[in-house]
Image (cartoon, rainbow, N blue to C red; front, side, top):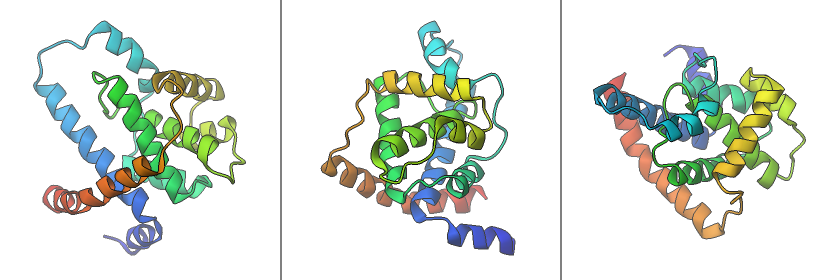
Length: 185
């Protein structure tokens, strides 16, 4: 690990490192499953997930993408937890949609944008700003936000016990994520 990478890791909040590692692991697992499956994806699933896959695949690792969002947004650490809860709600309401390398970046930026708007008091950013961070057009960012909001059925309130349960879950993942990174590196 270079000194720059080590410094970046030390300056990155723990929650961001945990989420990046968790998403990386889930994408890797889902793509292994998809590669081994001969079953076609149902048409309704393709349509629901298509907007998040976009025309152009984002070709940067998810951990770098999280760091880019961190550096270019004013998202509080608690906002990342709320974004994770929103994304969990989206995926639970659409169980046939799986995180993969084609959709994870757009789902993450949309969940973070939604969480910032709904839960961060210091929200000053706009969809245009987050579109620039995500390197997508404003019209695409707007479309992603609308699809995401309908996907979670506008269920944006996060109860304190749900927030605490999520934090406990994320904490419980640290050891296995560390082991995964040691084994897979």
